[in-house]
Image (cartoon, rainbow, N blue to C red; front, side, top):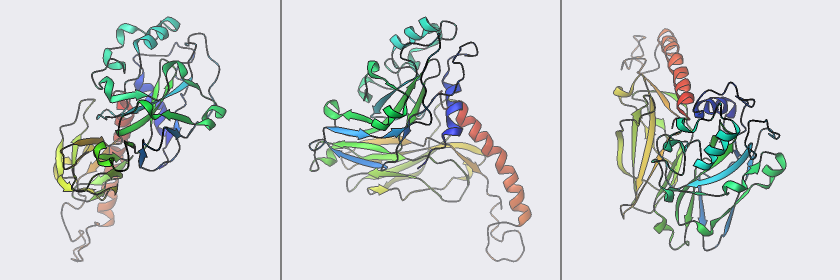
Length: 352
């Protein structure tokens, strides 16, 4: 699935800044994201057969050279694997307190350590325990943002990784606007083919940005790798600010099989005229669970026909598409909410 970076990078960069950066000489210069190569949504890796997993990525432009207010390893990239997700999606914008200190020394105008909380730093955040994530590349081995470097990809040494489900992230280090880039889908590490079920169930929700209609089925994009007898629960929640949504269940403990999801989200009437996020939880017969969150929001519109199955044309033909006038009014109403959803998603991406 191709990502529309031109619409994502600049808003995310701005959202991740802890304060204004107008005086920084590298300022609001666009940061280059990691552009992950397309891969299978569910990638299963047998640790008994594979010691190193090669990961391909590209960049849009090279980003070399630094200004006087940048740390000496600025404009580099790093790679991580996370065993858990949360609704805010992107991890915290700083990796270590040492990074914060170095950035403040280089650019004291824009990097104020007192304004950066422990939750803004990956090593100290309450969002993730130390066991929830690991470095694929070390902090002192961040790589330059060049075409030659990207062409080499990155090799993940699996020696320190335990079986389970991992979501991969690329990190662009250029204070004060550090950004994250998610790899779609998941990598599932299993001790061996025979012990695959011991790694627990896995599920991923793929990027999905759309206007949907209350009462209409909307296909949920994603994939799963689960043992026989596993179930899935699908929930939605209204996105209001940066707080966690109040999750409402629409599918509960339904049987699920491995592969691409065969799951629909039918927004209830109460979701109409709201911007919502989805989350899906799989549970295996042993009670082990894994939860994935929708990285994009959905804008839910009220049924434009108000439940009139005649379409408003008086003909009783069963069409629920509405008359041209009704449809035009509905589209006119949908567009502002869709644009609002985009703005909210952009402004909140860093806060998550």
